[in-house]
Length: 267
Ligand code: FPP
Image (cartoon, rainbow, N blue to C red; front, side):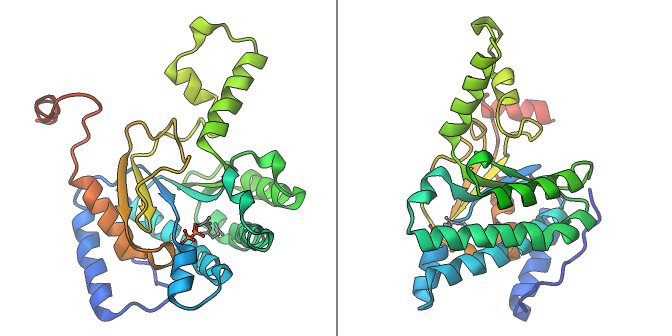
């Protein structure tokens, strides 16, 4: 396990919260942490409304939180983080909000590039990227190329992403390549997804309380543990992340087997 280093939080935490973070961190590091955590970052709009701010401000705060959570996940030894930042359905939002989100995403890619690279992160965008603005595609390619050989945490940012679209795109590619039906297996389907080198998520977190997947990682989520918290994404700090991991660690993953089989195999 990676040596744990407490990152300096960008916003000061109260002493109580810092103490809670220290205690939870100690506890969480006693057990294996999930290899791959995927997050549906929801609630930026409600966070903003509650505070009398604009929705755009909510997304800006959400983007700040991305930076902190990625760093903290890395500190804890999580190997893959996948974030749902913009779905294929999100184009239907008011155009000023879509533009603001695209600006934030572009800024994130450019501003964080050197720091992510210095930390050994492997970064890429995931989704129907050819439909994005050429400048975002260009910046994403620069980052992906720069970091492709890095061996640290893999950060996948899902943009213009839909789980159904991903499956359809994979099936179309199989047909185009002339694959016969008898060659099609679950493993092969995985190879035709957008990020075949990323294992299925162990834990999917959704903030702000909604109990649904909203077209996120539909194929890959088959055996993922789900954790839903009422906390809005901009408030989802290190302590909230630790709580999600702790709940995950206390679950029994059975993959279709019985509880007795799992216990027998682990002794
Ligand atoms: C859902 O909140 C959030 C989104 C659709 C966008 C997520 C984007 C970010 C966290 C910021 C940009 C990301 C990066 C990586 C820079 P919502 O707007 O649906 O909230 P609501 O349901 O409360 O209205």
